[in-house]
Image (cartoon, rainbow over all chains, first blue to last red; front, side, top):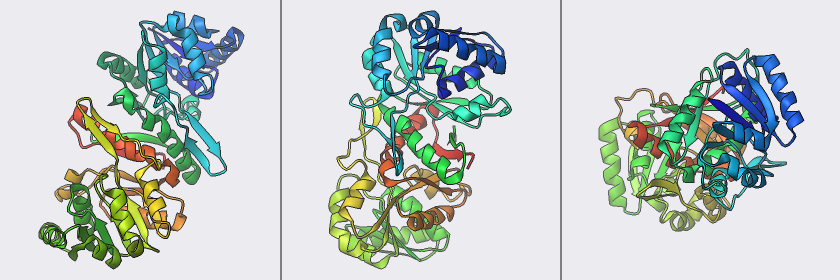
Length: 215
Length: 215
């Protein structure tokens, strides 16, 4: 199984790619620039080993079986719309958090479609859109001395089989557990909750994550 | 310290009152009907012991040092607006989750003010409004055979001292930990996340709660 990571040169995508490379999955980093993607892939292999290559976003989307959208919120819609043909029929995992920052700290940006994930769903009607990996700490993922990542990954979507596949993908990261988190229409609050985790990190000097109890 | 629980005849307020009564706090149940409040108070004492009385909402708000708004979302604004004089100068803890349900399950309702907590803040400019206790399981709270409630209570607010008091109030419930969760403007996603927890409960047959890791 080949995992494509759109935005794999950013901190969140890079951290996930490092863990999946270490888990033995084939990973293709996607970026606007194929050269930057190849450079990031090379750096990930140096850290984590494994089979990681880089392509431009369209090449990444075409090569992968499952595609992670770890894109900046600015450009999210434009990038996904352009990739709709390559993403058709595939599981797409949106992990974008539309956040703003001001002097009072982080806050959730309003999204006309409801959430980044629902925007993706509208732009990619032929894909199987799920949402997950919102709350991962890029710092923790990239630090392979952390052998147990203490986090539940909430996986949202209306396609049961797709959310099961993405939960299994989360489970490949040591310590992480994929937990079904509801339908895609309930993605907004999961994305926005990242603002709370950032506020918690600032108050407690932590890399906070979530665990769901009694599950 | 006297804790007032507006809506203390409902499941969420009753569950919290049971635990605070057991912890030895003075509790006043508030309801539209003083008689229903007194009846609920009597039932809580039978279960948990302690010092629990009942009054109408205005009497409850006047008698308490800290007031929990465990109200139904319908009537939230109207009830709080009417109580503004009694709530002036006090810490108000909003724990209301504006949710809807349809055949696809639970979902977050849009709130013009952003969240129930921000609505409370606008209606109660002379109170110290915080938000907390959104994710408690009423069933688990009311079951005193559960001696360890496995839950972090996120406490949101812009008044540091008030959030510290509310965190300490959360800590009186065995197993529960009060964790600062961000400013009040980030309350929406915490309220709305209750929809995800309900979806999780349905999928996993659980009484799911949250824990924040690395804190």
